[in-house]
Every structure is written in C-alpha cells, then in structure tokens.
Image 1: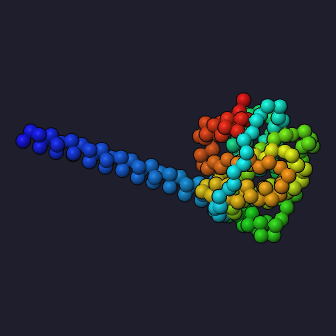
Image 2: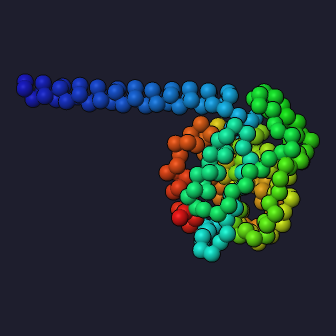
Amino acid sequence: MNYIYAVLFFAAVFMAASCGSDRSGAAEYAAQSADETASSGGGNSDIGLKSQSGESGGVLNKENKKILVAYFSHSGNTRNMAEQINAYCGGDIFEIKTVSPYPSDYGDCVEQAKKEQNEDARPALASTVDDMNDYDVVFVGYPNWWGTMPMAVFNFLESYDFEGKTIVPFCTHEGSAMGRSESDIKALLPSSEIVKGKPVRGSKVRSSGEDIKSWLEDLGYCK
C-alpha cells in the first residue's frame, strides 16, 4: 500500500512540474508576441514585412584590414547596432543620410519607401565617403523595408567602386530578417566578397550586445 501511495505521489509531482513548464512557455510566447506586435506597429525598423532567406558568405580575418561601418537608420535601431559594431571592431563609422529626410510618421514613411521601391528610385544622398578606396572591409547596415534595403542604400552601394572589398551586411527588422537584401547586394557588387549578414530585431538591439559581439568574433573582427 505504501508503495502505491509513493508512486501516486511522484506521478502528481511530475504532472505539476510539467504543467508549470507549459504555463511558463506560454507566458514567454505571449510576451514575445506582444513585444513584436508593439514594435512592428510603430517601431519603423521593418517596413512592409516580406521575408526571404539570405545566402551564406565567407569567413574574415581582421589582420591589417581597414574597416568602415556605414549605415542608414530611420528609427535609431540600426544606428545603435552600427555603434555597437564600431565599438567592438573599431574602424570608422559613416551615416548614410538623404538630402530629403524620410517622414517621421510611420505610415507616411511606409508609403514613401514603397513608392521608391516601385519606381526603383535613388534618393539623393547628403554626404559622401571621400576615401572609400582606403577601406578593405565595409559593414553596411540598414532597416528591412519591404523585404530589402531602403533605396537610399542602393544608391550608396552604386556610388563607389567596391571591387575586391569585403562587404558585411547587417540589418534590423521585426520579423523578416535580412529579406532578400543579401542577394540584392550581391547583384549590385558582383566583384566584392559578400559575407553572411547579421539580422537583429530592432526591438532587441539594445539588449543584443553579446550576440553581436559573438558574431563579430566568429568573423574575426572583434578587438
């Protein structure tokens, strides 16, 4: 009889633990879903969710390489990621800005970004990198807008000769990761080495320092 009670007791403990774990997992999922909904609704980091998988690239070696971290940012998430990369790997940093800033209103920005993509537009850029030839490795950062880079970044990449350089894309998003941006970069820069890019959720950028650092260490570009 004592044996039966013991079996029943341990079975009850196991069931309680399993149910507790399920509730914890459900709560975590709900919290993530709520965070994603809030971020994609007004975070501006990922305009027009449209997902495609990226393609892989090579492994880098930092030794004797001059680095530039170039980025376009609208909400500030990509800027934050660029600053973290710059802090971890050194080099210079450059912000890609348009002559006419994008609207601060999310809806208006969505419409303009879609219109530019449909028209294959190249928004005029406000500044240039005078000594691009001096750089061996160029990190290129952007938010995912309608499944790829903002058209301003297309203009930036078409404005210089990147032949022989290593290009490292990074991207902030709210669900569609790199989209098709890596393949778009490869089409624009066929004579460059395009390394596998790093996507980070815009809503998670400020808490993703260790993940970003680990990525740079794997590439061989962390101080």
